[in-house]
Image (cartoon, rainbow, N blue to C red; front, top):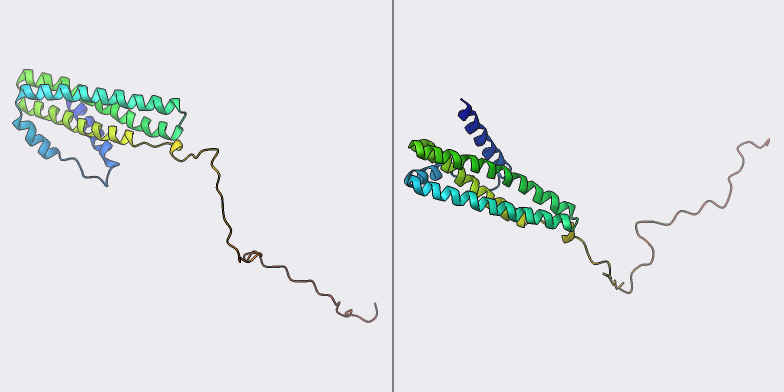
Length: 185
């Protein structure tokens, strides 16, 4: 029962990570599962270990980008990279757990569980690679900042009207007073 809850929560986490990307093509777990069935168990272990290792190096890269954003005090970039970093950490944690479960499944000769765990690691690796490229594309407020010494020269064409057309002149007050309403005053 505990394993089922763990697998269900992992599936929900992986599904939730992909919901924000509705405009992108959805992941194809069916073909990943088909390929997992064709891969021998020893190769699954090697590929899974390599994928987890690759995800750790991506984590290091994204951490470097986070430190770079902190050093430049770029809050916009810091928030963007921190969001990607949080997702990478979650996927890495899931992948490490799946790698251990894959090793156990291979040791027990449980091919179905091995294929499932291998598929989770492969999907997570694809998502981590995507997050790495998104973290590289994070731009901050420095991208919108201009040089303080920047000057702009504007040439006004001759022959333009001098008055503002959006602000018409005020009407002149009346110069003659009307007669009083009552002759007695």
